[in-house]
Image (tube, rainbow, N blue to C red; front, side, top):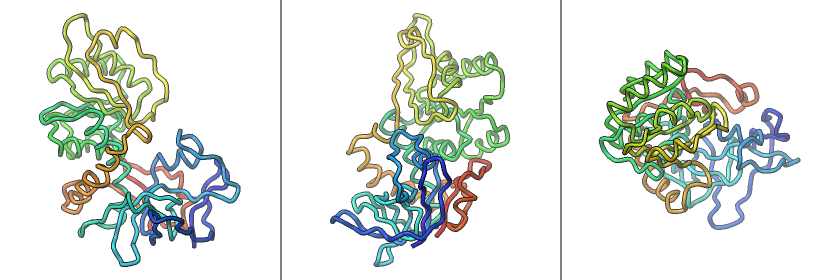
Length: 323
């Protein structure tokens, strides 16, 4: 079969012929792959930069962590991979598989799960979102941030504030359900002043942070209290596109009712992951099939994987490999 294979962590994936994987236990099943999204998670694992990356394999490693594919009986499913998934065939877990509804195409379905996990899991299990709450999404111009806006609105958010650097994309987020935009291109003083005014008028209940870095430091400074009773804010770190480290004053932690947590691989419980597959993903696939979620994608063929791997995808689109 043809597949996208990485032989060294500092190299681009190669389009090569490689043997089909073979199931070794009852929870493994082979699917015919139809579409796979290229996510920052997959790029991080392939390069060795993600904390879940494995050691190099001299025989090559097929990249991709999940896929849309067909079972032998023709059923279309989304599934987590056991073997790499950017290939004509892939081994997947029977226990982590979701049948797709009619009305959603393969590429759209492939683009969604990573972003759903990167937003819905944080909203449901780390932030415990309730109806009529105010949500700040730091770094909302990317694909996952755009999905987070729509999912937060679906879960009943009263007000959604979004940050980002791309002014054109920021404006487009208003059409997805954002209520107020904050440009990260403005100077620190102006940004802090804008966020403080927002927080004073409609206290921020939840922060979903896809950037971390300096913008996170500024948001924490906005939340800092002055010795009086404060509004509780649940701050969830999901990504670190602006840097992995920040300076966080102990005074901030002592001065405000702040819940600080992370959401990602390793932080979720077994029961939470079960709910992702049994309830959250099926619901989101259904919403997309009914055109109630906007999914912004760009397609690429498997044969072009090497030249497209590091392609710059504009306007927060998700790159999807079709097979």
